[in-house]
Length: 49
Image (cartoon, rainbow, N blue to C red):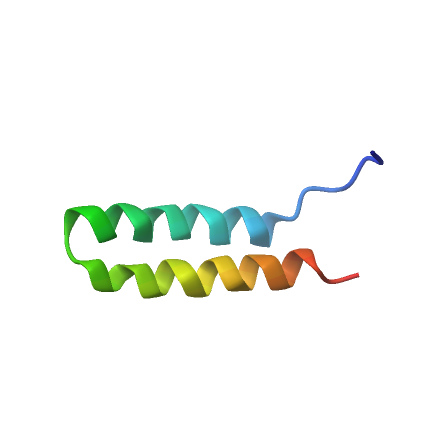
């Protein structure tokens, strides 16, 4: 596998999504929507050339 640069956007999106997942379990289930959106944005960022 080639050395690839770390994408800071993906890391930030992932950390915020983890926060939303914690809020899903601790506060209310509706926070799962934010996590899903951030996971989608991360995947979109990773698929860019």
